[in-house]
Amino acid sequence: MLEQTTEMNLLYDFYGSLLRDKQRTLLEMYYHEDWSLGEIAEHQGVSRQAVFEAIKRAQATLTELEEKLGLVQKHLERQRLAQEILARLEEEPEARLKVESLVKQMVDLD
Image (cartoon, rainbow, N blue to C red; front, side):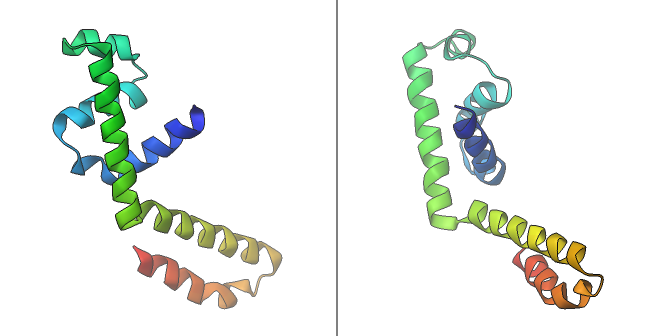
């Protein structure tokens, strides 16, 4: 569950603004504020099943956006490059010269 929560939070960070207001609200309650389906249903005045289905649709939308746009994957690649840079800098002081091109690539991805 923690892995799914982490993934959904990351997807939400990148694509949340593309969701409808209601979808954003439900995902924020469920993932960010840790409300249960029952609590959300009571607050929204709908059934628990309606909340469950709406959250599943919002999750599917976020996943589909990532499949099409790949922003999270690019973000993770930038992180990998940054870790590689740090590792090289620790190995030898002259590494800065060797990794300047990697730093430029990472910056250019944004």
